[in-house]
Length: 188
Image (tube, rainbow, N blue to C red; front, side, top):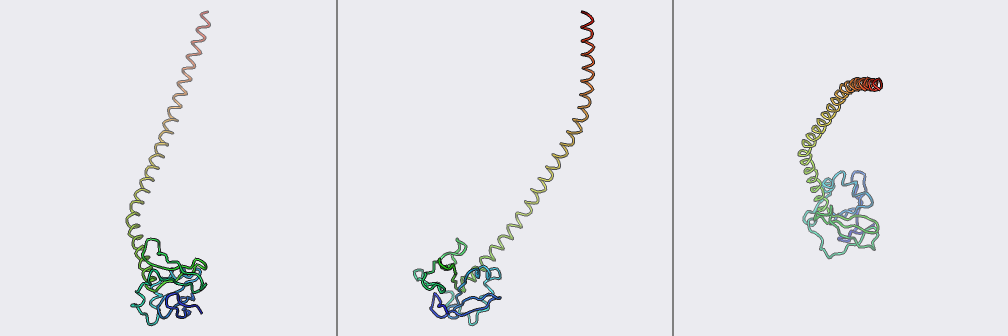
């Protein structure tokens, strides 16, 4: 079995909603392989922490020293690369550049849940503010479209009415021209 990157204790299998994770019972950290991180994120990390037997919050809240190197529990030869979750957060996770597994402490996972919840609340607030504006713009566009259509119809009626008059005037004008030409030829 693999060793915990933090305390070198043996990682144990931990079943979470049908996903078999590797878990360190001593330092309460988790090793996620492949798509496991995304799968667990969908259901929430907070539930994961709640299921842990004998959760030691004091040990879990301690961040590992920044200069400490962690070896990948899967590859065992590669060093895990620290990175900030969601780029701008101060939530530290560790990734293997070889197998792409992720190692995280339970506290980091709880903080990710809180961060995602905050994002969701911010999104809901933004929707509440933006939706009325979007509906107003949509209604305004719809009203402008109706006005353009009405103007187009009016122009069509106007043009049909006066086009007919114009044709009659042309006929009358042509009639006068013909008579005028006949008069010119008869005077010669």
